[in-house]
Image 1 (cartoon, rainbow, N blue to C red):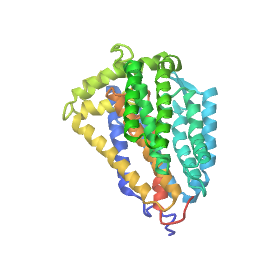
Image 2 (image 1 turned 45 degrees about the horizontal axis):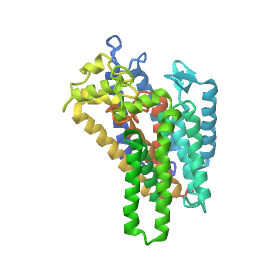
Image 3 (image 1 turned 135 degrees about the vertical axis):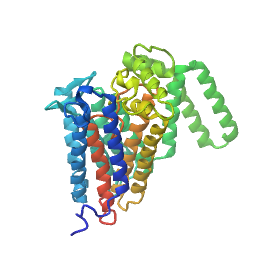
Image 4 (image 1 turned 180 degrees about the horizontal axis):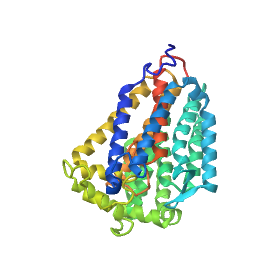
Length: 422
């Protein structure tokens, strides 16, 4: 049998086992989150946990098909997949199904809905990898950077129009791919400083921040002022930073919708509304805290059993894990994610083809972003923006898209000793 097409040839089965473990953990906890005594069977197709069982089986079929594909096909198909998902994102804006204020789903019959924004993640990673791996393309070149940024921004803008803030934010994580491919670390530092200034301007008097910025700049000029280039750059940066600080409040008040501002205010401690916008997070924190070290036991969580936490099988699935399996169970889940991410980075770094390496970092960035935001949201450190926990949250679109995202990398890795896909 030709090794290129052999199902078992060089597949990273450790990663597959981690994937399966997370899928099973998700299925079991969805069963706990929405348990119905009248439909107690975990494979009852009238329930979310029964449907998740079907989603897992179909995801395994999808993963198997990807592993059997020709590796060259994945790179060649990248532009087509990207165009299809962009068209679906446009269609959903016109004829999509609105759920919770987001027009992000397309009805496909039988009570099932498809969420194009989930599939846009792997298609964007594929096209970004194809472009950046092309000859004479360098992230440090302004035109190459703009084109790469355009590939990321187009689906972001369409998803923002739904409006789905969570999925929009996830695409920002692809900046780490550009960094790995040569983007200056100063670019990331500037983004980090702007984010810090944004939060500070909401919490602290603007003039105090300005005085602090001027004092810091004066100190740096005293230490390194002999370097004219550094001094000029510092002064320009200081002016931009002060201008940004003065713009934060107007942008915050007029650029965000009221419910978005309320959620951010809740997280930053600027307001407390435990019966309103802060209800979900407060109940989630109660559930996680009540689990203590070992948890209350499977199907024994009171917060879970009496449905105190809305969206507990999707956005807040982690609080089910925290309540019923405790700190120990939470550490196991976080450990699996950490192991998976380290494994993905290892797979990316051992690739001979730039296309495969770049795509691998795209996979790691998106999964990392999802895990961090979802768990931070569940424990009250980020606003509620509606983002699933990979492989664990209920939903076919989410599970299928993450499966495709991961198994494309596994297929590329299985053929890493073969042909360059650039």
